[in-house]
Length: 239
Image (cartoon, rainbow, N blue to C red; front, side):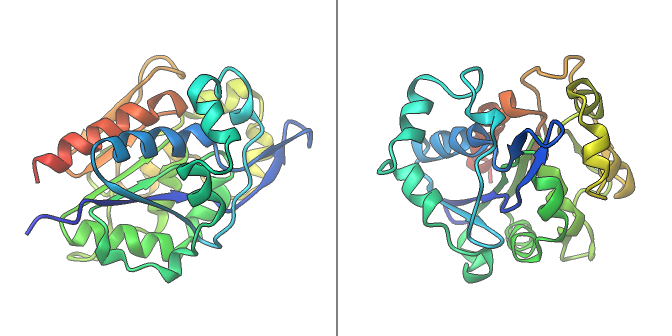
């Protein structure tokens, strides 16, 4: 039996300041909105959830370079389907993971804070995988994999698999590495190495780039959110 045509997009519930305390990081809006649009257009029922049921929008993700046109209109419309689901999210612990055939970890830098210990979200991702579904992430989303396991082996889900995610080079280019280090969790590349995954990336830190390794699909950065979701749909149709 094929997995349910229903997707859960996970949302970071953490927030913090970056750039010497000047700006707030949280959910990078397009990293949830773009997969939401792709998946709903492909006929999926799409839910949003965070570990606590709350979220903080990332400052950078609201700037015109990242949020404009129809995306901006959807974000500004608190009655849009996306905003209603985002603003009224359940806690992940209140959801039944068996109802989902796709798990997609959206992010934002704040995901480095809460995703590594977001056990309810991690349990859903592990269940989706065990039931033959697709597990995916974008940008800092792989931080969730710190606690996502292949239930058939109890090994890290990404062990021995290829993934991508936000590059350490990009963190350094943004000039925020020292602040990120203060949070005490590994960068995406470091987590991949720690868990025995192969990390790959595009030559450009802002390129649209994603990796498909069977039912595990990951994207490098905000520009990759939609193409990663399209790859998720394509892989799901082959299940």
